[in-house]
Amino acid sequence: MNIGILLLIVLGISGLGYYFGKQRALSLSAKSGRKLHSLPGYYGQAVALFAGVPALLLMIAWLFLQPIVLHSQVNGMIPDSVIPEGGARSLVMADVERVAGGLDALMETGGLDEAGLERLRADFTNIRSRLADVGVAVGSDIPVEVLEAAKAFRSGNSTGQTLMAVLAVALSLGLGGWFYVRITPEMRARNTSETFVLALLIGSSSVAVLTTVGIVASLMFETFNFFKMYPAQDFFFSTVWNPQFRGGSDLGILPLLWGTLYVSFVALFFAVPIGLMIAIYLSEYSGRVLRGFAKPAIEVLAGIPTIVYGLFALITVGPFIRDWIAQPAGLGSSSSSVLTAGLVMGIMLIPFVSSLSDDIINAVPQAMRDGSYGLGATQSETIRQVILPAALPGVVGAILLAASRAIGETMIVVLGAGAAARLDLNPFEAMTTVTVKIVSQLTGDTEFASPETLVAFALGLTLFVFTLGLNVLALYIVRKYREQYE
Image (tube, rainbow, N blue to C red; front, side, top):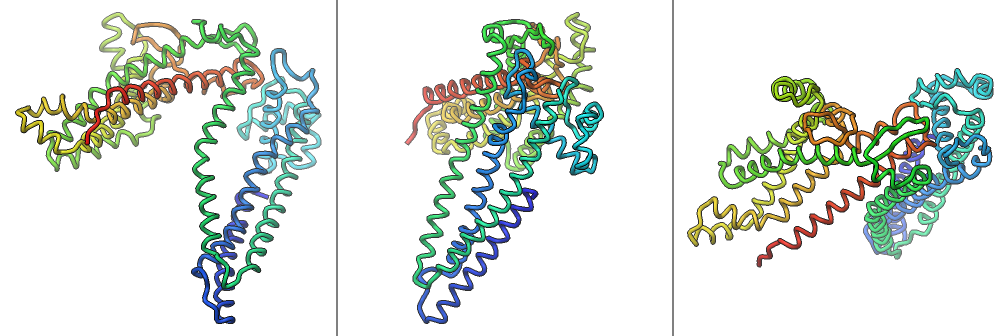
């Protein structure tokens, strides 16, 4: 059964439980003449919670555990001869799951029936092209054993989803009905309902923490697999990036890291001064009418899709820099360059700096301004020596947000800076970043059980550690230089 339909069924049962639970409480109160302990809605709410929440939790747990169980069952169908040299069994299983998803897509679109599914062993070349039609690329050397394992994985997944649907509906009806028959006028339904809601709030508050732990764990696991295939010292200290997908690859991160820092530095060098000056002008000098128009107009820049910025860099900024600056000065002949991507990215980052800094500056108490003016300071002196020091933590936070946004940008770099991994100081040369290579290594007709694909996880983990260090550094600076006011 489709997960969406099952979810609607469970929610429908919960809605009916709310209505009938409320009506039962009112009916029992009217028959017995006893006053309800809680408002009628609490009785219905308790029935709805018992009918919906446990079933939803079962679905979540099932969806998490089912792939693990299926992997352990299908794992035995993969012989050692299928695992490529330098690969890992767990990575081959990722291909199995991907092919299984493609088979499901073909079944849903009518491109394959059950009889055709049984004939796939003799027609593997044809099925490869049909999988490509539904967006699943499976490389030319996927063995038949992987296809058979994918068929078993798909069958087990279908059976598991059916069983999950039956158990979820049964649990919803059972717990909802159990609490429904226990309703009495003396029942403390409000306490039950509020305790249930409190548990839900605690669980919801832990989602962010658990998500972060899951992201880091997945990156570390696949990075560990990568470093079993490729030496860590070569990855961190090599100055050559040259993935070949057929051996002999050089996967040094230094050119990518340099490109990331270089493009981000150019973007911040352009965005931070302009953003701060905009924030100071809007908060301290401009009138109310101009501020009411200018601030929303600047914030529109943050809502423009990055692909639009990338096209702007590709067809406007890049050719302009090439024709009017780089070529006349003999510094470059390509429209793709660090300067192109950095300038366009800087335009995108301006509202991140200006809007947040403006809000922080406006939050500085007016009494501090008045005190500075009372001591004879000019407006510019008040801004430099009173307002900006008081707003420093917020301004640093705005710059940090802009830096994180710059480091994680992809589309502007692809179209504006190119894809060349090199160590160079010339801002008119094409370079690339870590995020661009993560995308390129994980897309296309690639072998997942290879270091050239797994390197994307090592790149991601390195970028995560780098941004985490940037956050720690910013937190140290804020705490060291923050000024305390009563």
